[in-house]
Length: 415
Image (tube, rainbow, N blue to C red; front, top):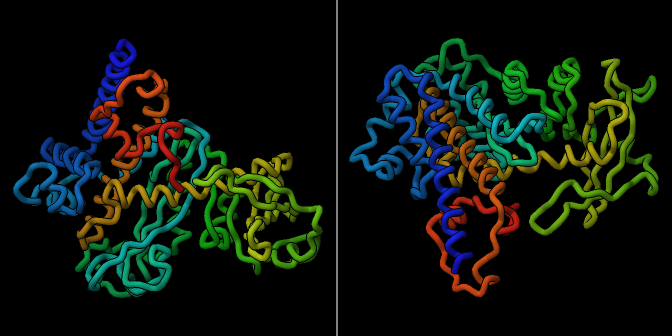
């Protein structure tokens, strides 16, 4: 009986720590709001985003917050005076505190399916969310990952050229007059620069082909002597000696003994095993080296991914492989962001409304990452069955299970 008595206070301690952590997070927002009422509305909004409300639009969140109508939340997103850029910067600072320094920055985008043509940036465009061209908005995001966890920390709305050429349409959606067309890689460049200027020194920057194929983005990182692993297409040209050759030709020259089997990290079914090969190519920075890295599927050897790597000359293949595998958690971030904190449930049409909703979603997502880190550092107590006691699930245990706050040893991992 003593063992069960000891278990319940442990749950209560963790619950209290999570409550205190949420209060610290929302208190940090205070300086970025001109009025106390707006700060209180933002705190309520974030709390409602963390709830189990079925629909996390303004009406659903207002109902969860116990409000008769969503007007205070609509005012918060559209007209209230507060600095969403400062709140955004605070999210990265908070994640550095809770997840630690020296993590990996991942750039990627996700789509938000929409009806009509009034929402800022909406257009028929390709989105990986649907795997095809759909009427949608596209957001480019920055995620931060360390061994303690991962979270989204920055966001930018992609405005297609058809929008920036149509000033009346932009004005109707509240797009600032100074907003010009920027590619997804230029948006990624802006977010990475913000992180660097905030003092973050990531161990690696990673991204898929959308970002890897952009030579300007690669040169920006190389000029900062920043290590990266970026996916590229097979027709990407590199210099070998005095000759430019496509990555696909370098792949064709590899011999069987050039491949090494390594894990790119843990997956839902165990280690993610692939065959890997590395070929040194010319570097133009003078301080760091550059390689082509190839990842071959074990099930289908014809399925080979190509990467460009920029890192110190003594960097090991194992380190590069782990960096390449660190890109996958961003998909978890999108899944949990949309499924847990309402990243895709908004119904605002304006440019400002999009940024404000996304910023508060970042706050909620960062809190969940911190909460998971706190929960996973708690000492694991033996289950009641092992003690010969009847199982009695506490409300805190149920909450942790619903929110994914149990440690990896206590709950199955999700891909």
